[in-house]
Image (cartoon, rainbow, N blue to C red):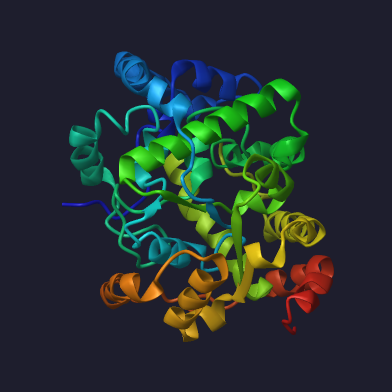
Length: 367
């Protein structure tokens, strides 16, 4: 019987290394009530260390020699903007490579231990993605920063583990390119290794990444992958903020090592939205028009196949008609999730109007 709640006696750091876990915790604290959860996470990670070493020995040379055969495609919409559906659809193409859920949880074992890790972890994973009725298992495409947190310590996703330190984490790590040189070099190396493993794991030649954190990394990604393609998908800010705020509170119980503070309000989410989207607006000029596709989530949902066809044409991804049946099959088997279950709270509307009214206008939305 698959569980329905995202709550475990360990954190997702079980798939990391002890070195990385200690680096993550060096500047943060674990509250007493979560000490056992932390200790168990370290214990499992320690047990898996010999297997991590074996995978490095077997695969490191191939990973070091890996070069993408085609320019990567990055989906860079803000959280809760339709990025998951778009990602899953583009990954139906046999040429696509991507980080799946197994890789993000066990990035050091995905190439050698998936034969037993996949069925084992699927047993404990909710059958549906938290907060929405979307099928979920270890093969499903997943956003990258969950995996990056298990490879190196520089990511804002640490706030899921340390919610009381949310503000400091964002201040220090929202802009990855501004990290000190040593941390930035480790981030780049880890990202390239993750991309290489995704290609070996899924067999695709074109990497498809979905990562809201990339909204503040356009310059960094353009420097690393000069020919990369970008898709910016957006949704009405009222709906995005309300959805993300509620979504965060479904994730915290599964990974947190600190209690969520009472002052973790919608204002924190709105400020993250403002910083992320303003940075995107500032930096998108560095992307040639031929390498950028922007669309509204509502427009995408109204004619999914039309927009996928346009994306293939814009980026020269190949014959869309050959892969369209696979994407249509996915749509038939996985109806678009219901995004209308929660109306925006009055605080959400007030805060968006206060902090992101100009952004709302630039994106073409009204109050």
